[in-house]
Length: 158
Image 1 (cartoon, one colour):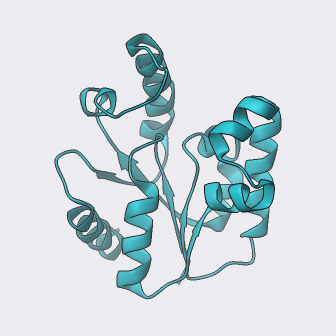
Image 2 (cartoon, rainbow, N blue to C red):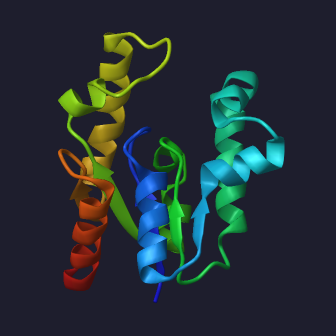
């Protein structure tokens, strides 16, 4: 059985859902953000501000490379990983997009972010996610347990 790789915009619940899914399926769980944070000893947000986008994305690619030999696991990715590392993600396993609508996304707490910045961020990423050949699971109005149940059903029928 291949890995299940969770994608989606920041704050959509990839880590929460991934941990629950891994527990339900009795698989190991990996989070690329956690891998980066452990390696560099600081949050991804702080590291991104310090390094800039290009160097931070290189850190994401390195984190993905450490997971290449991984099998039968659940992997949560950073909110922008799929924008720069799609081939690596596809090689890791089955892609699952946790989707959210713009209205719900705008209600998420993002520090120091204007509504225009939120809209621009969401629109750019959501357009890419919609075009991916991946299982898509909506998180809108659902608990993490409901999302996991829907995801498991989607994998079995997909």
